[in-house]
Image 1 (tube, one colour):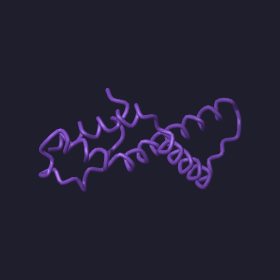
Image 2 (cartoon, rainbow, N blue to C red):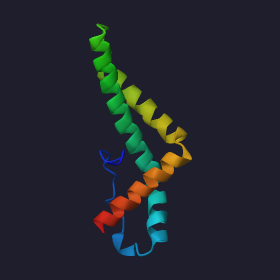
Image 3 (cartoon, rainbow, N blue to C red):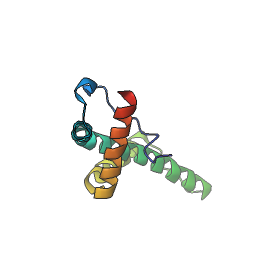
Length: 105
């Protein structure tokens, strides 16, 4: 199981007919990478928010469940993830995008 499996990468603007070589797939994945990083960051932020809320409830603490707090947390987290993703993580995500494109072609 891949750590990105629960992330839906947006491939609707990919011209699959133009993807012939491994280099074509790699270039397209690199083009899609910035938006995919945002999607992964957002999914991670959602999951983290939910886990934090559960832990706070278990501890008897008041949860900060306002929609604006959640939205702000998710926005900040996904921007931070996009900016700070390691080269290794970017490469793994790029490889995952390529895998997804091969499956859909």
